[in-house]
Amino acid sequence: MFKKVKPNRSVASKQPILPDRFDRLLSGLAIFLMLAILVAVIRGQDQWEKIPWQIWTHLATISVALMITPVMLCRKRGDRVHRYMGWVWSAAMVATALISLDIRQINAGGFSFIHILSGWTLVLVPLLIWEARHHKVAAHRSTVRGLITGALLIAGFFTFPFNRLLGHWLFG
Image 1 (spheres, rainbow, N blue to C red):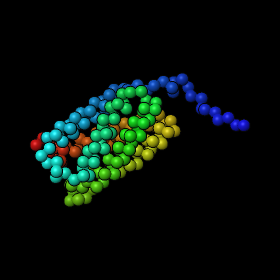
Image 2 (spheres, rainbow, N blue to C red):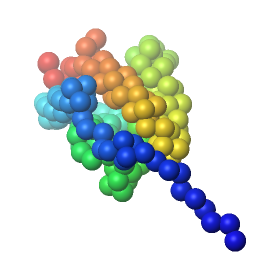
Image 3 (cartoon, rainbow, N blue to C red):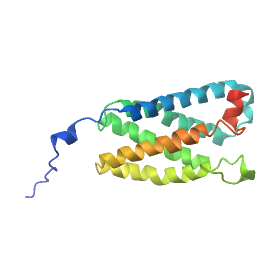
Image 4 (spheres, one colour):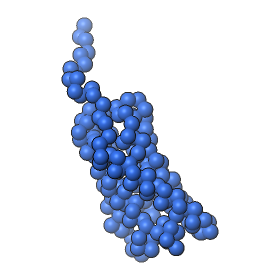
């Protein structure tokens, strides 16, 4: 009897969102960080057996997110592939954040500043999914950019200085 009516979306809302300079910058930084991680891991090969499973799992999940990031930012958005990759990216980010809570080699086994980003990621990823599912495009894009900037890039770059494992492997 009652017919479900789809919302009338304007032609402008159906136009694809093309990558802008900031998207390309984030993509380039994600690629750079992924390459730095790969070089560091290869250079640290003689110490691999000493590394706990949590760090290997953390590196694996963050690598998935880093590899997907430039693809997601530079391709068509909103289609089935984008949604599938978004679910994989979101799962990788949540897994990375959860695993990081069990990595506490500094601060005498306590949490460090970087763990704040893990907690924030666990809050923002569900919000990101909600925004996407409710077609809050501007909010979704803003949340994605914030997560990439903070949880991927800033947190990722802080794994290299201060005598941390990847920094030690990369710079000797």
